[in-house]
Image (cartoon, rainbow, N blue to C red):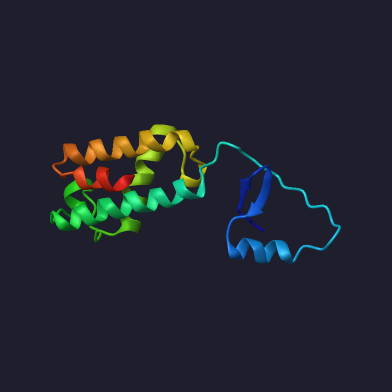
Length: 135
C-alpha cells in the first residue's frame, strides 16, 4: 500500500483524503513500519511538474504545427504522454541511465528539463512558453 504523507510541525499527516482513508483503516494500537527507500525521491509537486512540462511541450509543438516526426523521426501524434514517453524518458535514460522517471532524484529534474528544452530549441521550437509555464 502506498500512502503519501506531509510533515507539518514535526508530525506526519496524510497528504490527501484518499491517504487519510487508508490510514483510518489501520487498527488502533498496531505498529506499522514505513520503509523509506530513498529520501531523495521527488516530491508530489515535482511529479506533477514532469507532466506539466510535457503538456507544455506538447501544446507548443501543436501550436507551432511541429510533429514528433520532425523532432524525433517518430510518427506518433503529439500528446503529453507521447512527449513524456518518447522525449522526457529518453533524456532521463541518456543523462542518468535510469529507465523510469520514478527513479529520478529531486535534484536531477532541472538538468532533464534544461536538456530537453535546449534540444527542442535547437530543433526550431520556440521554447519561451514552455519555460514561462514551468514555474
